Amino acid sequence: MTHNFELKDFLMQSFVEVVDCQVFGVGDSVEHFSVDPSTSRLAATSHFGNIGIYQLQRALLKMIWEKTIEKAIPWAMYFTEGGKIVTTYEMETGNMRCYPRHQDLQSGPFQDIANRDHDSGSVAICPSKKFVLMDNMVDGFDLYTTAACTGIIWTFLVKSTQRFIWNGAFGEDGDIVICGSLSGKAYIFEFDSMEPAQVLYHGSGNGMVQTLAVLSNSKESWIATGVSNGQFDICIWRKQTQIPPADLIPKDVGVLSLQLLINIMLVLLVATLTLEKWLPSTKEHIAILTAQVTTNTQGIV
Image 1 (cartoon, rainbow, N blue to C red):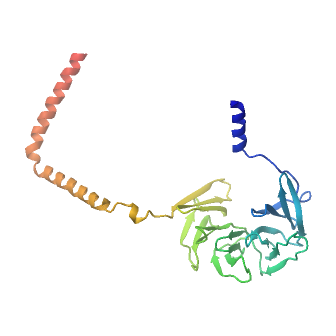
Image 2 (cartoon, rainbow, N blue to C red):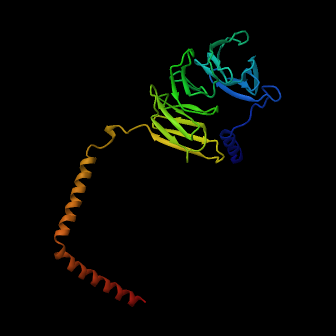
């Protein structure tokens, strides 16, 4: 009976592999994938420009729709608008393509919703604010809306002299943007601001901050950065975002602290002014106590 309980407990706390299948051809690696929890569907893109949408049914991953994009790598792919739209972002062309989710996803043509004049790198999505943050691989990160990626709302300027891909991310429920850089720094921007609100220095600031991750909740925010300089280290920053409500802080805490400080200062002042009166007798008492302790110790030995 005990053995069965332990086995059940182990199975409930452990992950078990349910699917192991090849989704693209030999040598065609997976670039990115996204999951729509409302329909249990998975969308994946490949290095050779293939796109596939799959339905997870128990232990099977069934393909329900596929398409190939010519001469471009679909670098990122996301379900947006509550899973109603699948959007891809191409590295070479800068295109963002929108695929409405039809009933069977077999005959729905794609909609080319944006054609940029330069490449695009990493992409981040903020579902709550419906924002898209894209590395433009020229002068920083461009901000769009997921509903209509036809015009740039704002560009967060991050200087770069080399064409590398930098990660960007949203934090604090989309109120801030964190951007990687070439110079070993991560820049924190607030919206409608040309200058960063804060600059995070990763170590000595010599490596390229290409990877970062952000975690925010109602009480605090965490930012982690990784550099591409061979040191294989990460830096983590934490910021408290919730200040205790005023009604939870006792109103008399400050008054009591001030009164205690005044009392201590008065005691020290009186002790200093009457030093000649109490210091000699205090020394005499200490000498008597020391002699008694010494005598008692010798008697025990």
